[in-house]
Image (cartoon, rainbow, N blue to C red; front, top):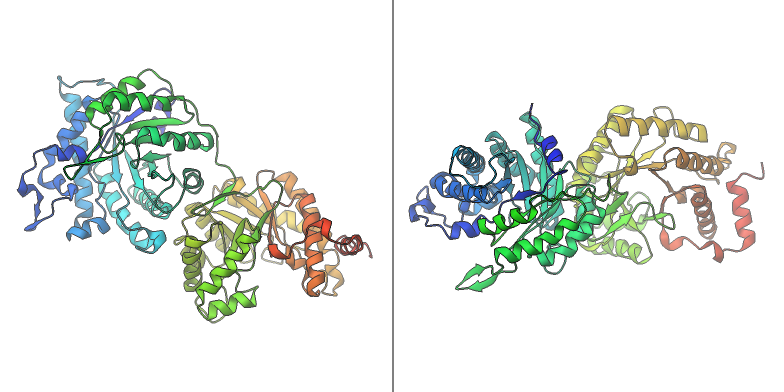
Length: 614
């Protein structure tokens, strides 16, 4: 069975694949009859996708023009074939029909081109149909449309494109990474149901200011999207190739995925009320040729204002040049908000995860949540940012309340105003998934364990893999919470093997939490809690060097007075980092530098931690 994904991998080792140019500006140059814009008695001029059923030959001509220019990938006229765009013309019910027609036209164009003895270009080259899907004008991260509504719409469009023979799905001109998450899941699910393997190319739009519309830069977009099941990542629209260079160069330094660029023919000028692009084909090809020096670049072409002449000039420039390998073989251990990328493995360690936005652990936060005081809850989050946290743990679990409603409200507010990545602190799969559907960043799920056996553990791991999140694994099984180093290691190994081998979660996205317990319970069994945890950290860091290790540090000091807790937590964190701890859930404002603690207090804390009085 022919596999497009494998063929693409093979080809991009040897040659650049040329993406065709603009559709919209090409259509503006065609003579389109007025009746071609009429559907159900209504004039819907501006909805280019309707031409797929009212004037299919026009789009076929455009495809053939680009094929004559030696394009390897032709994009279907389906950019706006999604319900929330078509609903503006009262034809949302035609999503499947228009998407399918778009792919059928592209396939017919390919067949006619290959059979025509007068066709120009290399007739022996590989030609792929890319089903183009845009974002529309509604952004899920701003609450303008729900994740599920987008998912359903993209599913319908993807079915039409795949049913009609699209080889690739191209999600382009994207402005919101949450929109892309929804689209990627929809396309992959649709393909799976149709028993097809369809590679997904993702392309974001970076504006002149240097970010996507919501403020996401290219590095952050890559961090979030590279954990999803996509084939390539890149840029289109927004700028010309000259202004795109710095972003593509940055992407080339961090990407383990093939990279694409199909930019505009410069920035548009307003001439007679229409967008005009002044960059000539020669200029366009010359500037784009500088991308050939970058690692990982595999796909190159045009967007707004580019014509078959531009694409022919570009294909001529690319001929005979071998692409360079990607800079990295796999993604790095990073998490991200919409605005920032943060390494899980901080230098110096640890990753400091703020613990105050927690209804279970913080009375103040809980009362604000119950009072529906979002300003107050945001203030707690912002204070943790200012205190030096690297990420913020969010927990909304409280008896008698709807945890799903609470956590989605909080995260929806935090995602717009908190610059740090969020840790989704929940143990119910439905709550975790609801939170992931409103969070565009790359999060950590806190947490999964084996307390209820493999079924629930599997459910949470599946969510981490599906939505591209990292995951904390707590050393708890069906019998107990692990107290000894031996038990902690045994449970960690069981969870790691299942997460990696069954769910295909990458090792660097696994964060072990070997648990620690209070030293102040008075129970002799807890006196060694500190040293058992430290020993487990040491062994885990040796055995799983790609993974990370975290602790809820304040657990060690439950039952002590406030000042004693500060000292104990600070000393224990210091010791744990020396043993290999890479992340810590703490009240950052309450952690003291070891140099600021009296030596006698440090000695006393260590005696308790290492159980030296026993």
